Amino acid sequence: MIYIKIDKQIEDVEVFFETLFNGSLKLFKYKSIDQNDHIKPFFNGNVCVRNGDTHTQSLWTNSCDLAVLALNNCTILTRLEIQYAKNCEYQQLKVEKLPLQELIIDDSSLPLIQDILNKSKDTLSSLECYADVDLSPLRNSTQLRTLRIHERLLLFIGRMDINNANLEVIRTFNNLQELKTKDQKVLLQFSKSQTLKTLRWDNTLSKIDDLPQSVTKVSAFGITTFDEANQFLEKNPFVKELEISVQAHVATQLLDKFKHVKFNFDFRDNVFTFKQCYTYLHPECKKIGIPGSEPDHVLYELLFSRLDDKQKVLEPYLQAVFVIRRKIQDAPPQMMMEQLQTFNEFKNCLRQDNLDSSYFERVFNQQMSIDDDEYLLIIVSAYDEVFQLQADIHKTVKMLKAMGQEKRTTLKRERFFYHSRHNWMQPLRDEDFRTN
Image 1 (spheres, helix red, strand yellow):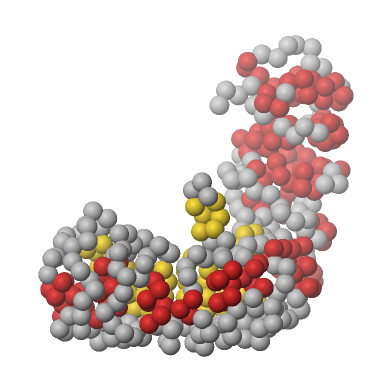
Image 2 (cartoon, one colour):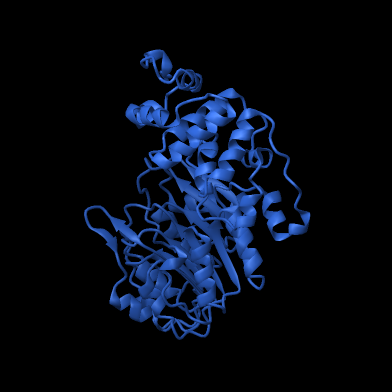
């Protein structure tokens, strides 16, 4: 692959073509040619030059003029990708036939699309375009194997759905093997297909209503929960390969339950470590956790034992580290959660070696910010027990609630200890709160 940048005008089309496609550049079969936005159309690309190109097989470009010139003169061009092309007014190519096998085009308004599709129908095996591209030239195509359809969103109009005429054409693609879409109406056209093997679904798994039984491989968009993947695979047992984005513990559960399925995971916002996931799959490797000795570690373990909702235990400790809000999407199996009952094991989830006092200060503020009376009561009781505050628990919770959430998120922990020990006899002052 060679990348070529066009930043000046060349008015002689023969010289232009000779420079890019012949001479020393003819050695490169795969070309990416980018034309600067400020360069306006400067020649008629719809011509056949004297010395054509017999080497270029693949071309990416953002110039309609250049794409037309290549289509007319590159005799073995099998792959063309046109992106961000503007001001294209060509209606019809000079050549009668095209050898294109793959076409990717991001602008359905190009008048030339119909002519390209018509002249490459006998060879085109892969097409990627927007839903509003007229597909009629490909009706009854026996060559098309891959179709990738993108949804177009228009300002003030919204989503442009595929029309009925295109749905009728799509229904004639009897040899299609791979489909990319997010539209259930498009998928429905293949309900009785015997050839469709791969679905690249631009939506969540839960949005697939009817999957053709010929499909064995599915990839889906967005983070997938265990319940979504579980329901999908149980409903569609003929799927043998699944490509999804998940958290690590979800991947572990799926690997454990669906051993016959080949998974390709894109891991997102992982909390559990690889070792913890491995231990779930191989419980014989489990080791006894070492209880904490530091007060803050003991506090964590006390809360873990007292709060039924382990998410509420973990989230303040996670949010105190990660800038982006990170949480466990699904409730992991009990055995995985049990691995986190000691702070020494849980801290591995944080991917940080040194946790200083400022970290536990942030944890405290995260804990105080939750508006749940029962939760606050348990939190305050745990702090009172571990740090020996000898506080009036109910009065302390009442004082915290009276502050409001914003104040609680900036309350200094040491000042909280001080007021709790002194039964909140003194009024709160500015120095009790952080200013940043």
